[in-house]
Length: 181
Image 1: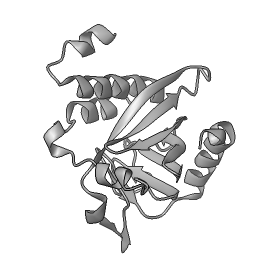
Image 2: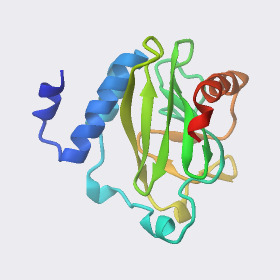
Image 3: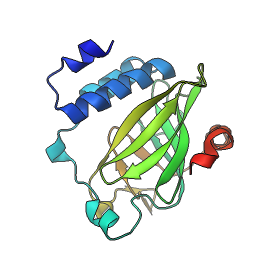
Image 4: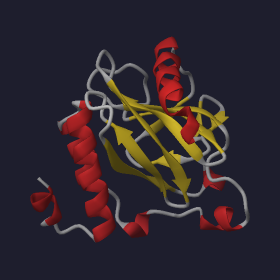
């Protein structure tokens, strides 16, 4: 499985992201959705790391609960979503598609990415690395419903309002992996 992914012409960091996206797609049942996201990865020159924030001792992701989706609208069939809590640049949350299963993740916010471990919902002891690139500068965040999005995640758009289901999914992952934050 990995040999065909490694033969792609993408730079090494993006091969790792693409491999993780494909692994997560299989475990999440997201198939073509995340495969498309992996093939549309930005080049390193498109990313603006927040290294100045990390060096200044400021957090990369403010503490709080966040919802991001491949669609700016919640609960869209065929779109992948991620809901997570951030505390001191440690994150725990889930990837899901509406009316489907979800996979929990935990990890950390780094200057240029969320470095996550995705736990396969069917094999609780199997976790896979998955990186979501941070884009742009947090000082020039995008606006959603009058609120400023603290970060921009590659392939995902911030969604201002979480549903009861988002909170339920997050609560399950927090109860299992809350000690990671």
